[in-house]
Image (tube, rainbow, N blue to C red):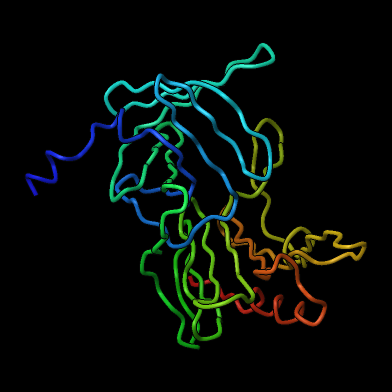
Length: 256
């Protein structure tokens, strides 16, 4: 262990090179990911403080990076504007962990092309799974062989352990408020604003397709709503899959 510690590169040297975002986290202590994000986000740290950052399928920016101890500052300038991001940085298990202390979340990056090993997570056995998300306890009827693929920042996702299939995505957020007199209040749950089907549509080769289908679950006695949507790993739902996709969200039961 002492020999490995001596051989470990200092952070300003170890951070150099190209990294890709593997996942987000809301726990400062972790360097593992339940699954790998597919957004193609990357950063390249060059000697001398030059930085490239962006998305492989989109735009990129050139900026600067500076380390003071473990405090990493990224700066981007253009069009008369300056964007500055500040993180606590560390390298653990060959992964770069950037923690945004002000926002209470972070991102975990790995070397481009490095093998990805997901962290262990619960797997469904055919019985409803019961979990807590953002203080909301729920049960969800899943087919056997589904694993938890995301659990951070009030978001959870479940998907097939092997191959492609239907993926269930859950999030908890605060409901919008209305102004009554001089105070903002959260209206009680009602079937007119909550509980209807939600659809996200796109056009593929001139044909309108459903990207996802879902339903919201308003939580009585709180200011929260649990949102559920189901999509397919291929990027769209076939018409014959929509009923099964919605049934997954409809299987949710809130635990009191």
